[in-house]
Image (cartoon, rainbow, N blue to C red; front, side):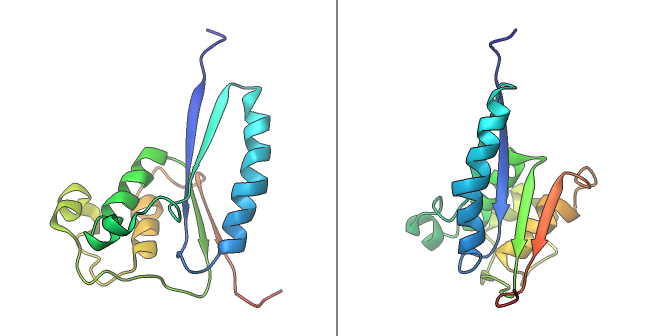
Length: 142
């Protein structure tokens, strides 16, 4: 039993064009230190930062929303939102497959992918209080 490891995945949500410094600090400093601490407890931490996970082909084929929401499901219950002054990219349409698979977003047309991540990942899930963390920051404040 002592050899069994548990994997924990944390989804990082923010708009792609801002919060680079915050995401970089998490990926380069915070998560490596946390991994080291969790290793003693046989917990393997995986951070999901889709800045590097979305291909041009996926973006051109309307697969971004589906990929984001799928990753949120795979990371539950851990969600980290970093929100600033940008609203993010608003798709012109939601793919039918994503609407079918993630039916909770059907009534939220016209919203940015980042807002949909927060709605789907946290606000529409009664199990999330105390398990999600959102940081709100103003660029230039400081």
